[in-house]
Image (cartoon, rainbow, N blue to C red):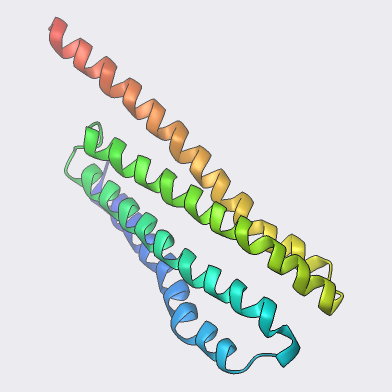
Length: 158
């Protein structure tokens, strides 16, 4: 693969991480200090804690994606290191999905208090998005393992 393509993907990974970093540093801290209503504190703070905790596996997955792109740059895409990076991405995505599942009852309570049923649907988006990423990483991991197996069998016969 050409370096220009992986350079573009690395830039995309960085551009995905920057808004999340800015939001976690500035946006959520502002929201903690300025809640919409003190009545929402019991439900808002567990949601914010869950969002903050989910930032760590998110950045771990971005780091693993960056490592995977580095392996591709070094022509090591069919290696156990790439399989391990995909496995870590899958684990991080499942962890994010689980964290947002834990947050979901608090979102439901907040939606009940505020009479905003669409809030529950918004809370379900990260759960399903991270599940899709986890399934995609699992499929890629399986395909890469099979390709490595076929490659090693071909090297033994040659």
